[in-house]
Image 1 (cartoon, rainbow, N blue to C red):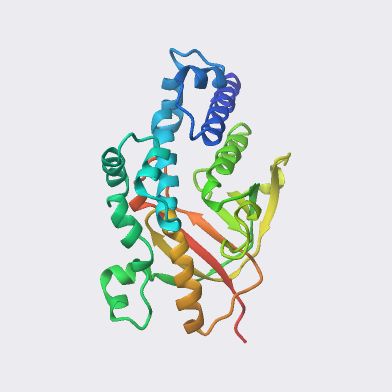
Image 2 (spheres, rainbow, N blue to C red; image 1 turned 120 degrees about the vertical axis):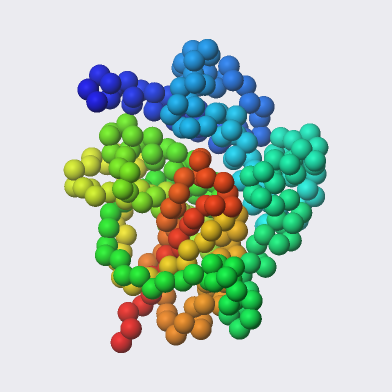
Length: 295
């Protein structure tokens, strides 16, 4: 790619990043394509094609995906009526919401609320844990990992809303030609949502760097060193809204029976595939918990 081509690509990245940030900040508003064109500073006749070309989904699909992601979290963590959740997600009827949710999550909203979370993580003493499904959900490996460096953007608030920080981080990386397909995307989480108020939760959206010394860091992106060591790694397959149950099982079931203690580093998650092109049921997330050295 020549310099002019790279410069124009960076301009498009910057403009479309503004659109993504606007969508995250106005998720409850009506999707106005002309308004999004204004945010992108692009022609209303062409900007949506450019967006689709860059992100592999339309702006409408982005809004739908983010609203369903929020709805899944509300189903798992809250007790609100399904019709209220459906309306907030932009659907005029529970039936329409149920069809859309079923298509994305392969499970009706009511069933997702009752069966899509805690029931997938049974006690280690239960015979259910030896079934193939149980083994998939209980896949914990002990892995060694050396220290590594990431580019990080801080996020404050609900962990389920860290997606906006990731969008901004990858915009920052893209405009500097630093996106590397080998790099892992990860989130570092400092607080327990059960013990800290939601608006005070601290986290970081991160991307692995292979040549960090060559990067000139500028706010709001910083250089962060991730500690190495031995880790318990739980691989979770399914919607991000179910991760809270994976944590409960990992800390409440596996850890006490493992004979190991946690290290001092915060937990982090590695996102193996991209939610833009992956059904929620197929999302693969690795939860990495540092372990104290034995002996």
